[in-house]
Image (cartoon, rainbow, N blue to C red):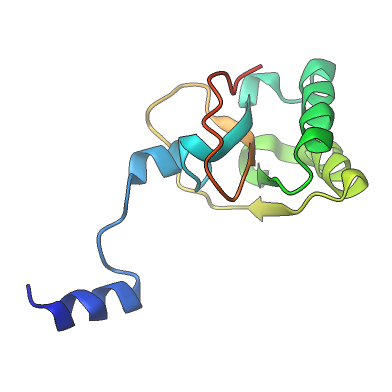
Length: 122
């Protein structure tokens, strides 16, 4: 493959994708950027809402990634937390589901850069 072919592929978005399985698992971001990840089984619990509210205050520039399809109507409570704290958020739908787990993430709080936190789960 020559340089021009490679450039054309990247411009069209059809070039190689870096860590696609990891990005599917963490709602489109890399593990090293994740601050908090909430599993589908934890959605709706007060502990998950409290943990998210705390992390939103600690990381005011972090973006809340919300998988609407997985979270169902519960996503509204988490969205309101992000709005109240002034954090940016992204609503995802028709998100490609990771086949790496039986309890996927419904919410991921992520930084724009690597934070490499050892424990991202509740």
